[in-house]
Amino acid sequence: CNCERCLLTLEIIASASTKIDILSLDIIIENINDNQPLFPTSTFQIRLSENTDLGYVASFPAATDLDFQDRLEYRIVPLDISYKQETLE
Image 1 (cartoon, rainbow, N blue to C red):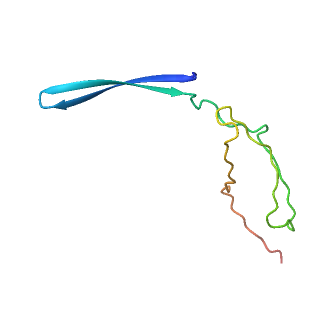
Image 2 (image 1 turned 45 degrees about the horizontal axis):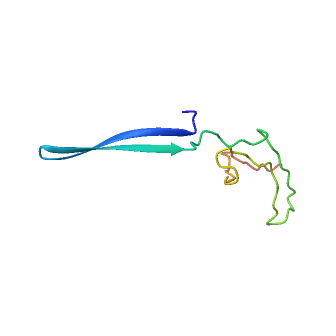
Image 3 (image 1 turned 60 degrees about the horizontal axis):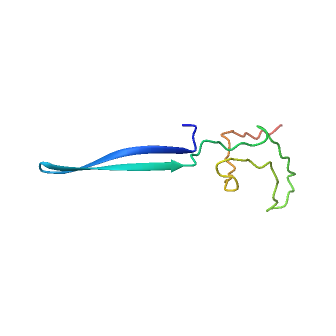
């Protein structure tokens, strides 16, 4: 749905023996998360020296999300890349 609000109507039926009662429940969902986070570029490269101090904080472009604005979380996820060190003789 491409809307700011969605309305869901549920009917809840309670029954006991031969008697029933029906409750109509309206659920209003506001400000639907319909935007994805976006970085300004699809690739970004950071080069660090092997002597970079522990705790060094590298900067990178911030992502934006119209639904969450300043509440974005960032994680660095390792790629599944096999590394093999070769020794030349």
